Image 1 (cartoon, rainbow, N blue to C red):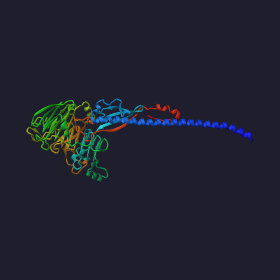
Image 2: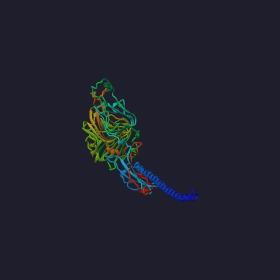
Image 3: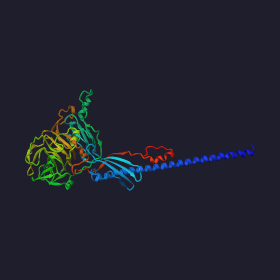
Image 4: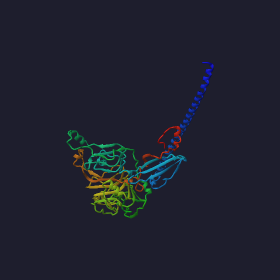
Length: 530
């Protein structure tokens, strides 16, 4: 090939090189734009992520801001403050709240909080369910655990606990001793802060060992936890005294005080026999009885309260010593009335004295009930068993049984350093039931009855003496209104406060308009960006 041919061929290839260069430039330009779009998209994604995190921060800020107000005023949910308004926070965003107040079917404060940052269309919504730590949320709260050696201070056969229960110490249950063939039965959640101890009958183990053909009746424990197994939780801090109520009480009396509740008024007879009639205001009434303390049941100077009646309104009665619940009007001295009364005690006017037998009956009965009573004794709250108040700090009768056949008690009871119990429970005849609607908070479990001794520790099918020998049976029902309401100035735990029991994020509409502009250029598909 000559020199001329080589030059001609070289000139022809110069056009090809130019084409390749141009092609590479186009590719580089496309890649550059693509990279720029990807970077822009990533920048937007990072920005949107930051805005989402900010929105969650403002939503949770709204929750905690509202909880702070509830801590100052536990009835804050009854107002419309902070609700359905855009509230600025930290000058960088907003939150907006809606609040559902508690009721008997849903006894919780439910807060929904939506948060967003300034100049952002991204919103996030958080919903929480709140409850307040209160003794009265439980049907029974006991500070000292049950007794593994003495059956009257633990839960035994025949006990039916219709509501939540908490033991600050050991939870001791026993299906081998008591009344009847089944129980104890717990229909609500059960918690404890010590140890869980289930008493196992030694005789039942022996019977099972010799019954190799399974011919004999079943000896299994009859303990029944219907709402699930007991759960170990932190202790609740119980106050050591009710003394602070003295400073906020509407009325303070000194020494032995007899009270008869007569619907919306209260008849009070002081230690000298002077009578006073008090009217219960709409926002409730608090009565405090001060004086000396001790075991002299009838002394004029001892701060004991004797009371019964029918309540229409809201009332709290506190005593520095004991409170005795009676069958009849204790302001009528020297005459206890009919000592074989069919029923007595304290009832709500809106409920009457009908014994509750089911949860649906209870909820129906409480539907229009606004009455609420708190009884707070520094020592014990007792059902009066023997004798009657008399003038001069004395008493009427000698071993006179004044306890009714059955007794109805509608109240939240608090025995700060003692128990709720039946006075001299092992003496006298067998009674009916204590029909209680409300709650019991006590330092230790108190007895209501005496039982035939199960000397051989026999299980239920073999225990032929399985019945009460004295005292009352239990028909206890938790007042569901106590999940969110209290009697006037009722005592609260020392570690009281609102707690979140459920947290969830609710979805908001997706915001994708920002992304559609970058999708065609970048060629990327991303879903579920909010």
